[in-house]
Image 1 (tube, rainbow, N blue to C red):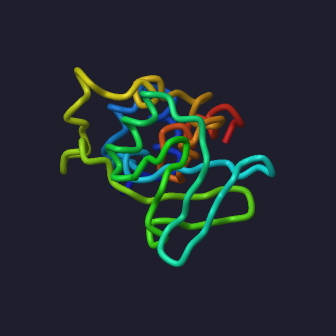
Image 2 (cartoon, one colour):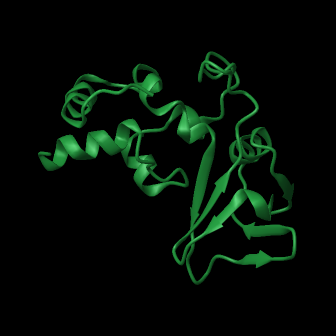
Length: 148
């Protein structure tokens, strides 16, 4: 990650129109973790070693979760408990995508990348399973919108 000032990063985020121009700052955090918003209707099951969460699994999300090393059992996604951090409103999962190179680029970028990754935007990052991490381009985009 670069050592630019907060103001310089906010200004750079104003000019940045996609995640590829931001990799030196975020180091592909969204490819290393994701989260689920916990609601009363979302079933989460905890055992000694695993966390299981019931979600609607599309073929695209199946591919996404499998690239991260999760097990899929019907509409249940299974993670090892050590990869999970649970808050009252979110289940955070840290699992590196197997398609991510050491230079933080996706080896599936030109072909085969899940749609949920290709369609990542400020709106999907806020509403989706990604959650905006502190170094994310979208965290800085939000700062530009709030006038910081």
